[in-house]
Amino acid sequence: MKNNLSSYYLPTQMPMFAGSPGFPNISNAKKRLYFIAWLIIGTCAGVLANFIPANTAAFASFLHLNSMQSALLVGIYFMFSTWASLLLFKLRQHFGVQFFVKFVIFFLSISVLMRIFLEDSFANELVIRAIYGFVCTSLSVISIFYAGQFLPREKRMLMLLLGLGLIQLGLPLDRLISSYLISDFDLTYIFILELVLSILCIFMLKITSLPPSFMAYELHLKNLFTLIIFALSCMCFTLALSLINTIWWDNELVFKLFSLALFFLALFIFLEFIKKEPMVNVKFLSKVDIIKIIILAACMRIFLAEQNISTSGFFINTLSYSDYQLRFLYLYIFLGSLSGFIASYYTLKGFNRFSLLVFISFLILSLASFLCANLNPYSKPSDVYLGQFLISFAGIYFMTPLLIDGIIKAMARGVTYLVSFSCIFSFAQNIFGLLGSSFVNYFLIYKSKIISSNIITNSSNFNQDYINKFANANAYNEMFLIISVFSFLVFLFLFLEWLFFKLKKKNPNARELQIIMQKVQKRVVEEQKLLGEKNEKI
Picture 1 (spheres, helix red, strand yellow):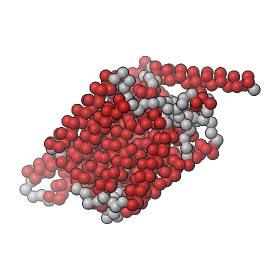
Picture 2 (cartoon, one colour; picture 1 turned 90 degrees about the vertical axis):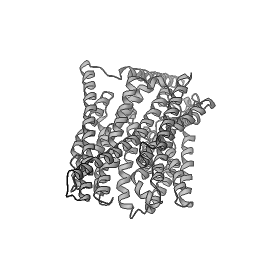
Picture 3 (cartoon, rainbow, N blue to C red; picture 1 turned 120 degrees about the vertical axis):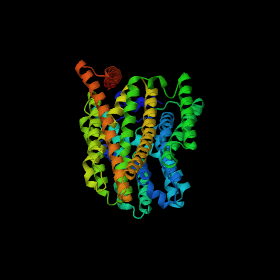
């Protein structure tokens, strides 16, 4: 198949790897169409993926769910999304990008039909969320491909930023939209919006086709067993972390799920390690540079978990605010994310700035968390506007440089390494995001109980309602201070590392960039030779 594309593409226009589209010369009108498709697909994927995390309480009330069912509804999306990162990569390589798009349209159509013809129930919603786990992960990849079509060649590395950055805006945008659409936990308008967005995605995918890709036959029966093992590990991890907030850490079910998750993960790593041609290169993932990237991504996800639980949770659960009353707080959070997305696009000019942007993000997060550590029983949402704006800014700003840094290290070595990095990065993002939420929730409940009991013990006259509010506020403040301190420590480490390479006048990615540039130059030489032969024939 790769050889057949030589008549369709020039060497510099060839796909980067199997399952990705090429980059032919296209008209400005076609570029504008790809831009519109990127904007719509990326935004819809972000919104569709985050309806449950943004409105867990509303879904529980509307569908009459107990706390365990609510946790499963949250976990099922992340379970399929995490597993899909590996499976869908192999699917694209094996069948090509056009089949991959048809695959996404098929499952989107199923979700649309289920939403139209089936009643709103826990079982049906569970299936729909599982489908969206596959679909939204796929749409995020397609949005990256669309971005690559309208960007000029010299800015093509930013296609990752444009694709993934747009998806990251989904959660704050969901919260903002939901504050206007949900009334008394009625999700009717949310379901209508979800239906419209799904149909819009299908329409855009049908009218905006991607250029062809070559295929590499990567789906083998020998890999089926390890894919199942990886899926079981993802399932146990996400279910355990989703249930922790409901049935607590020391519950026997949580212990068994964690034990199974670690067993299946260890088995998956062992099986891939002993393979001659592994799907995931374990030796590459054990390199210090890759481990550092994964740890940094995990740290940021854990630190950002507070924004999913604490700030809005404090005003809703402790001070009895409604989502509608918090709409301006959600607006500031969304604007912070949007600003981080735009800022990263305009500041990520070269490969030397990756470390700089990442440690700046942790510094901003440290400062912002400190600014939010001033809550009390009389606080208003406006008191945390600036802090939450900066936290959401940092959460988007760090993501792309960190991801591109890892992809450069992988692409210099080959496609298998790219699959490996993409798999572990997605795994870390989803699992540590859930883990961070569990840690934050556990800390808040544990700390508020200690503070309230100390006040009651040392006081004879007290107002229970005020003490609960005071204890919760101080628990949130301590959590913000802890996040601030740890973020600052990460910043110091990254700053000293950046300063070391700066003084040595070295680029930590110099070797990988040289290998990639050699590959690019080889394609350029091949293209010039091919054009020269065509000119001689003319």
